[in-house]
Amino acid sequence: MKEPEERAAFDRLTSLLADAFAEEGRPGGDMAAKALRAAPALPYRRTVSGADPGPVLDVACGLSGALPLGASVLACRHLLDWISWEGTGLERSVSARLYTTELVGPDGHVAAESVRIGLLASEAWTDYPISSHAGEETYLVIAGTAEWSVGGGDYAAHAPGALIHHPSWVLHGRRTLDEPFLGAWRWSGDLDLSTFRVAED
Ligand SMILES: [Fe+2]
Image (cartoon, rainbow, N blue to C red; front, side):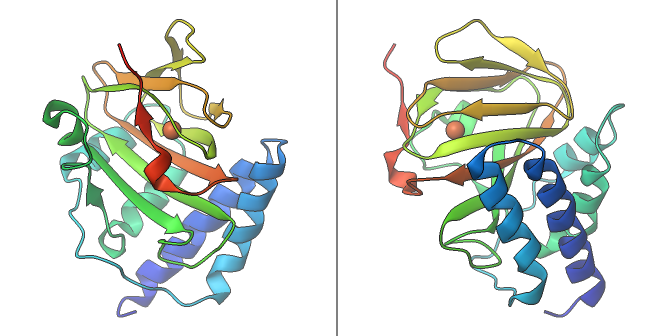
């Protein structure tokens, strides 16, 4: 850790996320809040040389209605190992427009065994395909309004502050329109990322 002020910003970020997921009212949200609150006392680790999402983060966090969490993300952005989704099996027109980072979890900057908590940034006009996975998941919209389909339902808009829950193996998709998107996600239950499946047409 070479930038103490950025670690302080990371700790602020995990504290705000703990508060947000504690409001969810689900055991998985409580588990995420507990792990996030334990994070400041634990070592910080880097995993890969990350790719910064670039302007999409600034544009998203500058949108009206963005949560204060967005400022905390910007304050520690260079400390985060942002990973491009290229090569994950999604069409390149989609994967090249997504960035993710795991904050706390088995592969996160701070280790945790029973949850994964991270961020996802998406460019505008990006249609993340309908997909599912074993992990139970909740998204918190931090900045930018995006549209979600859950369980085969119609797409519906979700603004900053919204929590969107995806039970294990329930189909879900998210598309952005003219605004980029920044969200936080948490997984509980089966944390095996390889269970991710894009739905057949
Ligand atoms: Fe998901």
